[in-house]
Length: 98
Picture (tube, rainbow, N blue to C red):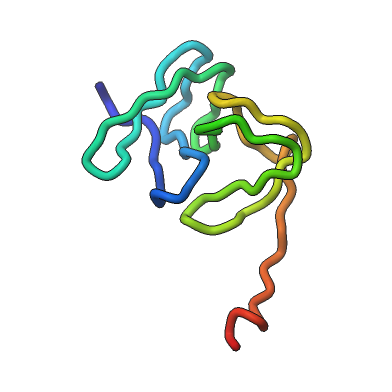
């Protein structure tokens, strides 16, 4: 199996696809030393994210081990995580420096 997805951090709940993944095909990624697969439930464009688990409306989207946004609607496992279903959550850099 050829790797076509990247898990940036073990805490992440999304994988970034490094190739276009058609609906019904496998997203193949590495979690540590383990090779994992996930069926794409819809086409996932190149350099876009796919949900590793069901994400309810308002759930955190974690990439690089960091909060990158929250969902605006249910995003089911294997579905595209995009600007259509998440919004950015600004970081509070000032409090992080304290």
